[in-house]
Length: 121
Image 1 (cartoon, rainbow, N blue to C red):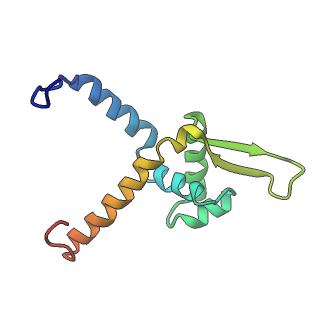
Image 2: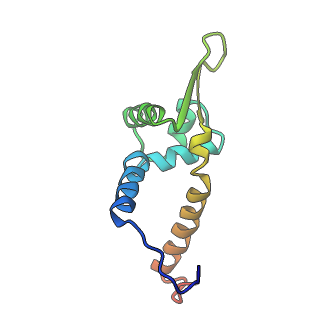
Image 3: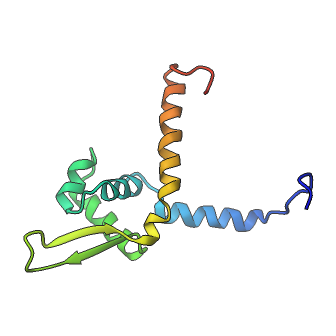
């Protein structure tokens, strides 16, 4: 295939894929929760304290939803000092490189908007 050839894309399928992604990972709290867990916070209170502004109720609701979507694994060990821990699943970790790129983009965007990088570089 030559580079000048146009690759045909199915926009309807692409839009559905984007909608599915936003449904599972969208919202104000899911990515910060994933980031918190991936940074080593495994207990509910650790996760809650690491995310400014999140309420206990919202964190609980989001964690349940994320568990249903196979992003987070909740483990209960009644005999352990820390009875409930949360971990990101391998499925969740597959999104890690995208999250890192989003962090880079967000950092650069904030600089551009703040006027610290007017060239957009």
